[in-house]
Image 1 (spheres, rainbow over the protein chains, first blue to last red):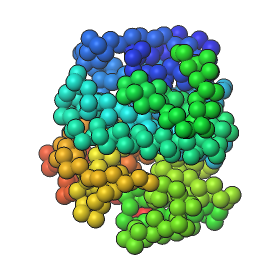
Image 2: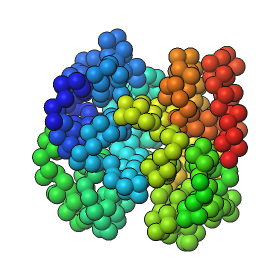
Image 3: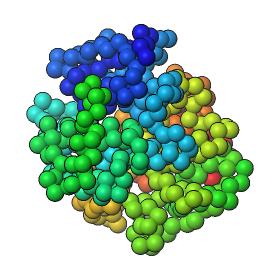
Length: 215
Length: 215
């Protein structure tokens, strides 16, 4: 389902951009991709600030010029505008459970990895939180972050020992958030799924094989 | 619209519970309220852990016993099951903008206030993050948290100088999240809206007068 009206401003290196790309690929929506060069700090340019005042990627720009920032907001737009292949749930109860589990993956997993990386990387000094404002790094957050990620992996293992997918019996956005988190922790912090976590390993192999993961 | 099938486990002192109560009141849904005594640490009881393994309030329990944790998940259920008086948007674009603004209110406002309070209160030593795991307080987060709240107030003023409500022309869940954040910052940290913020003061007076705010 091509949509020449939609533009996604994104970066190939950005885990948040990857969440949007996988979501689009799962739904079979093709959009115009506009690369933002984070290494060259293009997100801080005046041109990009007019598109996204928070100066973060990704941003989805609609046909009428409306700019949607924040990954869950982009996903909500795409689900509402292109309801085929639902990824956010199919009944009130199911929508609520997907929202709950996606949020847990994001707050306990994705945000913990992001916080650990941002408070550690030399290149992000003074930029401990993404967005408009500058905040100094806090070294104690790196130590705590690694513990939070270990706890996240334990909780994920408990969950995946009781359900085939994060939100229950069907693949959903919560699986996308979880696998992007794990790949990011593996690459940026050398913290892959612990070897003893059999249920997580089974789930990971299944999800990683989906064609959308290459998006 | 009474629903005797729905139970909300909540605490009158909990800002997250207040977000759920205001949402219910705006939609005119009455549910059975079950108080959880946080002062007596009832959320850590075995009985409550069976309802919400994260041991936080609020939790919405459906007729079939399904327990929905996380405020945005509870709100998503209520919006899908009771679509009258929409608070999460009415078109794909509107849904996306409400999601984006509600998320900004939550991550930049509500979460900053919560982090500041949890890393400061003597009674929360070892409990710097709500949920299953214990994390030590980090004093640097209190200093940084106050700066984040000041930045949040500045950004909110900018937004409310350009739009009557947080997400645009209509009252939405983003206004609920914002006002609960402000009341919590005022009460717990003595950080009300700065006196110079005229647009925020105009908006606050309008929203605080809604009957749902007493819920």
